Image 1 (cartoon, rainbow, N blue to C red):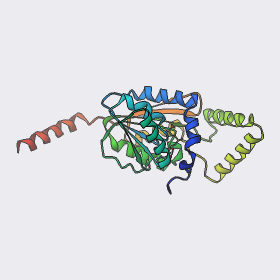
Image 2: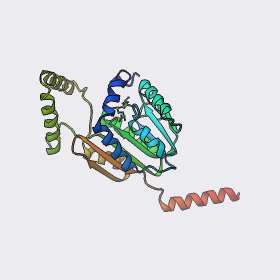
Image 3: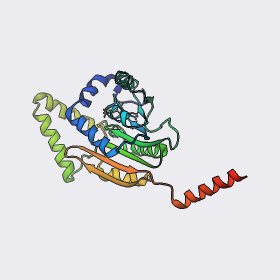
Image 4: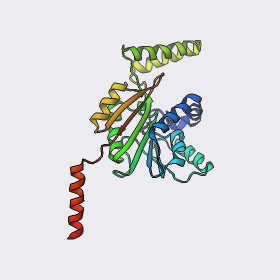
Amino acid sequence: MSQDPYRWDERVDTWEEVAESEAFLALRDRVVALADPRPDDQAVDLGAGTGLLALALAPAVAEVVAVDVSARMLERLDTRAAADGIRNLHTVEADLRHLPLEDESATLVVSNYAFHHLDDAGKELALSEARRVLRPGGRLVVCDMMFSLSLERRDRRLVLEKVVAMLKRGPAGVLRILKNAGRVVAGRWEQPARPETWEQMLVARGFENVRVELLEHEAAIAVARRPELPAANGARERGVRAASSGS
Ligand SMILES: C[S@@+](CC[C@H](N)C(=O)[O-])C[C@H]1O[C@@H](n2cnc3c(N)ncnc32)[C@H](O)[C@@H]1O
């Protein structure tokens, strides 16, 4: 757990409550709709937590691999999967930046609210890993907080909404604002990236059909896919296969 500065092992129950909220169930439904799961999909859920996405996908696909850095989160996910009679879900304890999964072993990679725990370099590493494990033509659907503390209009509105919501909680909210401000100054705040940064990172990592769907609050969903092999390569590969089978 040394790679987990947020100590997720200690936050399983509190996170499960958040994940069961109406807002997160709506996010789950939108991610699943955009993922368009198919019976032959080999799916991977990055930062799966207690299984918000993985458990929803499992009945609709061939297999789900749920990856998370927290052993306790994955224990809870295993328990829930067993209680639901789900047998095609496997948990893997690992960091998203170094996935212990084979090249081109997945057709669908999804994630919800995990990437803002990585800095931008970490996000890029994790996206490179996602691309590596996806087969050509494989789909990626990532939901996350997508904004920054900039003066851009959407960013300003989101930060103001958060501050107002916290102020409404009275002294506890004011304390929270001060704590968050301290974390920002100390560089320990969560690290969401703006939708534009997401688009740039995905294009730079070699994804295509990149688009980001903005939701009305802080969240947004990035959708992309790993390009199919170019036709010439496909033909060349077929040629190589034909040549080697004839030798
Ligand atoms: C906010 S929770 C979201 C969980 C789940 N996706 C959901 O929507 O309910 C973030 C999860 O990401 C995991 N996580 C954070 N950083 C990670 C990393 N570097 N590698 C793997 N998992 C990570 C945490 O352990 C936690 O379970």
